[in-house]
Image 1 (tube, one colour):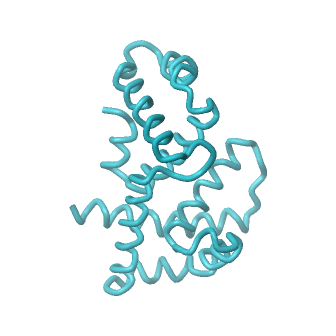
Image 2 (image 1 turned 90 degrees about the horizontal axis):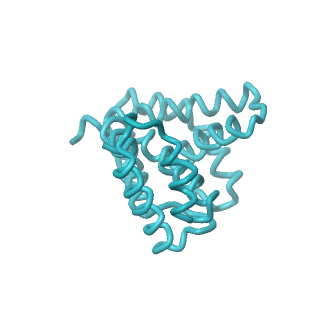
Length: 172
C-alpha cells in the first residue's frame, strides 16, 4: 500500500498535507515522471517498498496534475474534496460538540488572522488550519526560523485538525 493511502485511512489531515507536499515535490521536477522515478522512486532501498506500485502512483498523480492544469499552483480536486469534507464536519461539530467548539474557539483568532492575511485567497477556517500547518512544514524544510507566536498559532491549527481527523475516522 502506498503511504498516501495509508495516511488517508489513518489520519485525513496528515493525508492532505502529505498530498500538498507531494504536489510540491512533483512541481520541483517539472511534472516529469522520469525525473521523479530517478530522484525519488529509484532512491528507495530494495525491499523497503513496492517500487513499481509507488512509480505507478506517482505517474497517476502527475497525470492528474497535468489534466487539472496544476503545473504551477493549486491542489488536486480529489484532495480538495477531502478538505471540503473536513470543513463540512467542522460546521457539524461546531453545532453539536462542545469539546470541538472549545478547540475551535481557541484557534479562532489565529484562523481569522490567517484568512485576513490571505487577501481573499482563503475563506475557509479548515483550509486556513491546513495552510498554517503546511506553511510550518515548508519553513522547517527551508531551515527558516519560526518564532514562538507562529508556533502557538500552528499548535491551535493542529488541534483543530487533530479533532477533525479523529471524528472523520469515527464517522465512517
